[in-house]
Every structure is written in structure tokens, then in C-alpha cells.
Length: 301
Image (cartoon, rainbow, N blue to C red; front, side, top):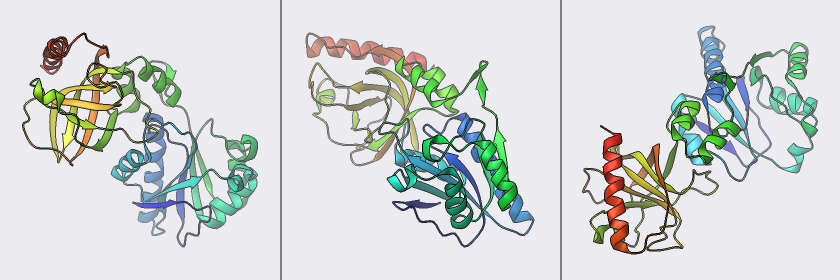
């Protein structure tokens, strides 16, 4: 997958099918847009007029459900040809929607078709709409596909709804709305080795900058490391009993005794077990970890 970033100048030499948005979370609604772009692009290849599939995104919010790297990983796995991470700079912020369509989409990306959600807005003051896209498409020779909101339990799926569930630690709802398991990626680093001294060696990683996280606490998880998947329990937070300043993701892997320092780890959160709390002693903490481990193992039975 080609990634275009840090520029507002785009010059494609081949046609493209494009979907636009922030794609925060890459949830089931976003995935429906991606599938349609891929379908249109694949059809163009069969018709002998190959066009690239493109995701055009803006990097707006400082805190997102997916880091840039995590979003790239998911989009690449989908088979998208090109991801554009357009900086939200004054030249873009103040651009009139008609200018955006003509200069960026038509002249720059040689767009053949656009796929957006029904509520998509763009351009200065969010003046651009699906109606404007359809009108300009007829004038400039591109198609516009407008998809309705994907629903779950009779309600629209949205990043706002997912964040609300995440705030409650309701990982079952979060994962159902996302269409995949919420995860945290990172490189395994050295911790203080307190877990090892009390019989629970753990992996430690620090979430990527701007990663939106669920409440501090203990979760039943599955971790993917070097292609292998391990069940376990994870504490997200500050480790208040032994080190109140460290904020990160600490995972005890069931049935794993490998040296994993430096490896990349994907921690997939499945179920909230309990809130983080400070214990009166390391012995009390160890007793609680034993209980958490048992709860986690029962979850996976």
C-alpha cells in the first residue's frame, strides 16, 4: 500500500476511486465504504480501465481510536492501493468545497468515482455535501456512491458510540461495533521486573501517542507476538501499588516463558475484569493477581 503524507499536492497519473473521511476506529461503517471502493476498483480492472483504490483521510483529532500506524496496518490488510494522510493545514481548512473537488479530486487524483457516507461534509465551514458531490460529478464526469449508516441493534454505528462503550470498559460492545477486536500495538520494553519477582512475569509496552484507551484496569486479552497468539490478562494504567508514575500496558501471558523483549506485541482486549486499584502491600497485590489470573483463565474456557 502506498502512503502519501505531509503534502497537499497530489498528482496521480492513473484514475482512482476514492473514499473520504477521518476513519477514526475503522469501524464497520468505515469498512463498508472500503469494500465499495475496492469493488469499484476491481471492476475497472476487469473492464480494462484499471483505477486505484484510495482512502483520503484527514489527521484532525489528537486522540483517536487507532494510531496512525494501527490504521495503516488495517487498511493495508484490506488491500487498499493508496492511503492519503492529508494534513489539516490552513490551505485545506479554508478551501471551498468546489475547489477541493476540482483541484484535489479531479485534477490531482483523476477521480472516476467517490464513495462516502450519507452525512459526509467537507470543505470550508463544512459547506460541501453529498448533494454537491453528485452535482459536480455529473458536470465533471465522476460517479458518486452514497452509503447509508451501518446499524447495530437499531442504532447507527459511529466512533462516538464506540468511544462511549470504551469509556465504560464494555469491550464486547466495542468489538462488535468495530467488527474486529480493539487492540493496542507496541514494542515490548523492560519494566521494573516486579511481576517476575512475585511469580508473574509480564510484558510491558507503552501505547502509541494519541491512542484512545478504555478505563484503567484489568482485562482478559489475547496477545499476538511473532505470529503466535497467547491468552492472558492485561493491566492498563499506572501500577499504583509499585510505581505510580508508569503509565502503560502490562500483560501476563498464560503458558509462555519466552524472552520477548524487543518483540512487537498486539494486545487484543476482550473482556473487562476489574478497575485498577492500589493495594496495601505487594503481598495483597499478588493475591489479587492470582484471582485475576483465575478469572481470566475461566473466561477462555
